[in-house]
Image (cartoon, rainbow, N blue to C red; front, side, top):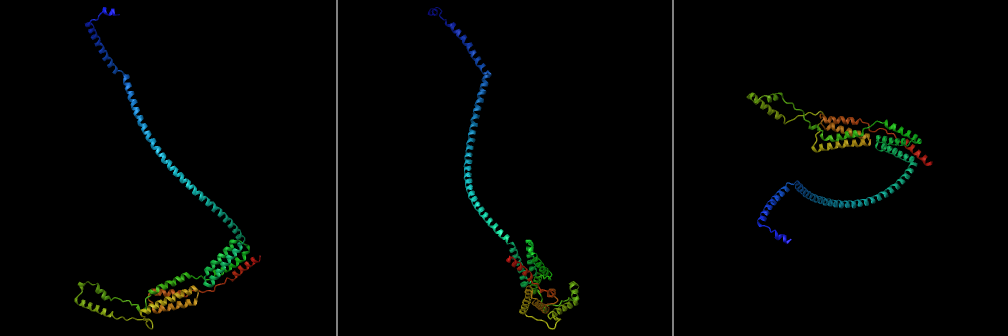
Length: 370
């Protein structure tokens, strides 16, 4: 091999030119190769794929961060809900314990009510066995009350209501042994209904209104006769001042002076033998005594004392006609009312209920003997 090299030594000029010639095409080849590489589409696809992969990685990281935050929030909420659930569970347990206690109390009350119901059933059976005795006792009480209303207060309406109650009680029992007693009660009811009806409430209210009106009655000595105005005075008053002459002016002045002088003295005629003159203190006692008269008549009405009732009304009528002004409308109305009240019958003969009481007692004796 060394011989070959020594025999063919290289020439410097030729080799330099050859190297130069070989270097120029290599550079051109390199430039052409790199320029052609940028035009390669796979390089762009690779770059785009790399960018998409990077963007996908970033988006995945962001979503993962959001997911972690949402998971942390939901875990926090689940912890809160779990705490609330535990609190509600404890509260439900407490309420359940309270309800159990109440349920126990209700069971005790139900047991007590059942025992009471059993006792009531027993009592009802006992009452049912003796309902006839109860009915008779109620009827006797009603008839006794009706008799008391008639004897003590003269209250016919109260007696009628009491007997109607007794009759309704017997009709509700439906017992055939009470038919005779119902007939007796029916006869007493017919007698009471046939009595004249007295309006105690209306008559008492009328007397009360008269008592209240006594203070408004004018006395006879305080009545003034009506004063009629003179026609000439009216005509002169209606005339205008400019049309009155001097003579007419003095004549009018003299007439007015005479009218004022005449008004200082009043002459009054009384249509009775002597005028009833009363001092202010006597007037007060007159009105109070008149009120007492009317009040006594009202008490006599409630007590069915006809004699006292009529005497008090008559005395009150005389006082009003003597001491008060008969021309006043309120006085006239009071006199007419007193006259009407005096004609009212307040004391009629009331029947006794001895027959009904005897029938009830006979039925009770028959029950006791059985």
